[in-house]
Amino acid sequence: MTKEATLPRDVTTTLRHVKRGEKATFYAGDRERSYWPGEEHEVTIHDMRPILEELALERNGFVLIEEPTDVTDFTDPDEKARYSRQCEALVQRLTGADKVVSFGAVVRTSAAGTHGHNQPAFGAHVDYGALTVADYTFDLLPREEAEARLARRHILINVWRPIAPVESTPFAVADASTIRCEDLFDSEVVGGLGGIDRSLWGFNLAHAPGQRWYWAPQMQPHELLAFKLFDSDDDAVQFTAHTAFEDPGAPADAAPRQSIELRTIAYL
Image 1 (spheres, rainbow, N blue to C red):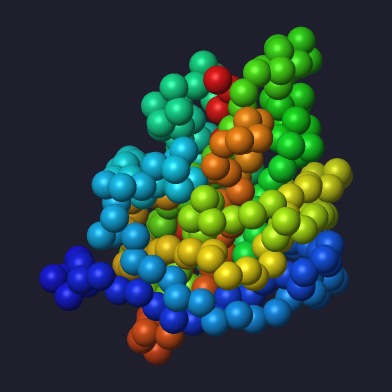
Image 2 (spheres, rainbow, N blue to C red):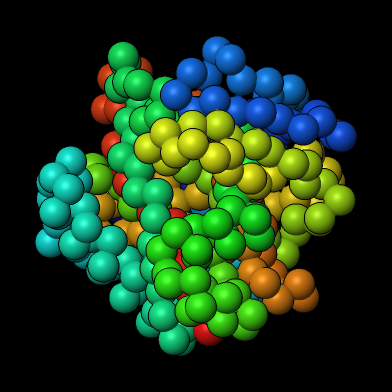
């Protein structure tokens, strides 16, 4: 990055929030069918780079990490599986978990003509909650082990990485310590993560004073964001809302955003 690109850069823009009290139903592959009653709010998204050393999963719900990968073809199933193992090892290192599993790897791009499943997700949300975490635990582990793991503390963590330098449609996360449960409203995702039959359950975020948002300008492929979505410890910082947004300072010829995200469940 250039010297100018390393200078702190806060952005004032609009983010879409759900209308207070409304439950949304989101069809990932057919977004025109969705019921997502939103409203726009002007917010300042702060540059997280100046405070990287202060950030912690248990304090803010997210961290930005330098974590290069040798995987380059995220469309190849074997390479995507290898990348998933790398992310599981990272989350195990971050949390000290006894075991980590992963699911829901999605490659996204803002390029024109992209299928709905693979477009950036606009709208402040948290995917997913306790029900979907339990569903995937039973999918991925033998039943007896799943029951034992769910009886102890477990954490859902998303790992988000750009595949190319981010020039447009960047990614923002909220400081989870500023998110109140009373501002989260149920969200049903139908047909998400590869068109599974059952619904996925999470939350959308209504706007409230005090919510604090962050981004990493010009994020690079050797960097990744790890952020908490759910923690079975009710007292723990969690519910890191996030969304794509339009950077008003992006040049007109900015390249489309390309990224990959993966959900992991850490069992402590």
